[in-house]
Length: 585
Ligand code: ARG
Image (tube, rainbow, N blue to C red; front, top):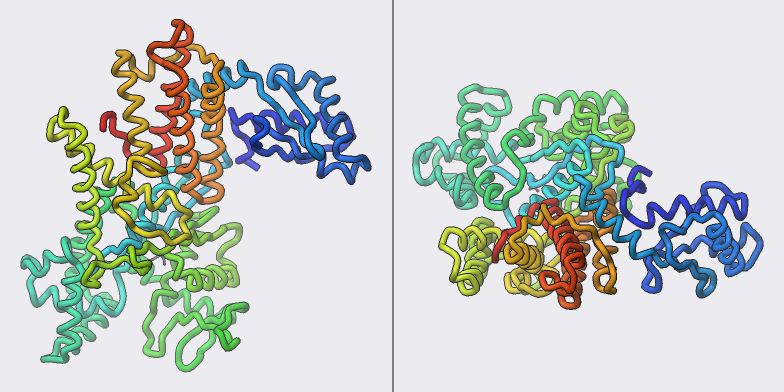
């Protein structure tokens, strides 16, 4: 219910008043007033339709009695200019212009800009999670971008977010990777590939392993045993390998301007000491059984196509542990040591079955208590051919090259449009626009849908794109430069006369509710849609209402205040998405 408390949202203010009127008219307490946005009214009340049965009267009569109760009470005098019954029994409410204006002014003066204050929760967010000695692919890009936007948004609402970067830094391939690193030497160019082109490093190790030449494969197998057995010399070189990989991850994170830092690394290796205990515990609880030599849990409700129960293998027949055991240790740690209220797994949709089984086993084991794990499914990023994005030669895309191309393409546009700016500023803008475009493309569609990666579309200055919103903000900055005024000082009283002005005021009041919804529904694309519509409402306002040349000083001050409120909302909204807003472009 915490999310229902929204400071400036008209529906939040009217809702309790309508409920009170329902109680006065019909003696029914705590009835949901069913407020909906509508194209025919500022706020529509649909409660009469639901109440008709209970009250035993036609919905239109119920609606009429409700209007009378609201009138008698004077509940609407300061808020509503008009309340009408329409259609089968809707109540259409038209808000007073001066009330909207006062709300806009109050929201602009609120340091939280109307963000709701829900009950604070502890929320570990598992995102990014690339694998050591492997290229980050566009799927990792998307979980990084979406996870970071969720982290920023939940934090802004007062939740305690615990970022968890579950990197793949453990397991059988590390035997061969360590042997390869030892062979090429840590200071060699071949080793440096871990920082620049990890796939090539991996493939070189793999080729030697598969060639079965000499004793490379044998040494690699022995190396895994040494690593998992805690051999200090092996762990030391393993640590240096992780260190090199961290440089690669961090270069991507810095380029992307995401909030992940080294302290958020909690890779698979972290949980190694827990794995044996996890297996013992599940066996003792009667949940794990040996099947074909492997220790397995068969959570009820998970079956293969032929109806046979699906196993979660927690100890292989050779005694080794895998991805599932690590994830069980992870969820136990997050629920019990981190005291999570909600755990977000921002992870590719193809891992849904795996994570669902992990969640269910954790629940059966009694680890979850009130903790709610959620798989925020990340849809695939596709190429123009509708298949998983690859390079022309079919090789996986190098993420850094992709990001550089975005910046380069944005740079070409900025150079052409803003020859008046110096090189440094132009390249800074190109970076913000190029990266902003890529991030916005990931964020502006529902996180679980697939989309086609298309530079031309994501960099377009028209449509629901990052650059469009950045440009809208930059245009407003330029209005203030022209006015010789700092937007923070535009604090005139807001007056709403023109329809476009009024519509813009109403749009501003939605900000807090939308951000609350993004957090509750884990849906950053809603914030994108909102910001896009806000920018469009601003354009309509700016076309219809002169700002700097407004007919009166009072109106000029009001329009500047409204314009500043739009700027603040755009910049803050983009910031919650992790996107920078350049002051010129
Ligand atoms: N490293 C994995 C991959 O690249 C993702 C890990 C997701 N998190 C987790 N707790 N399983 O596919």
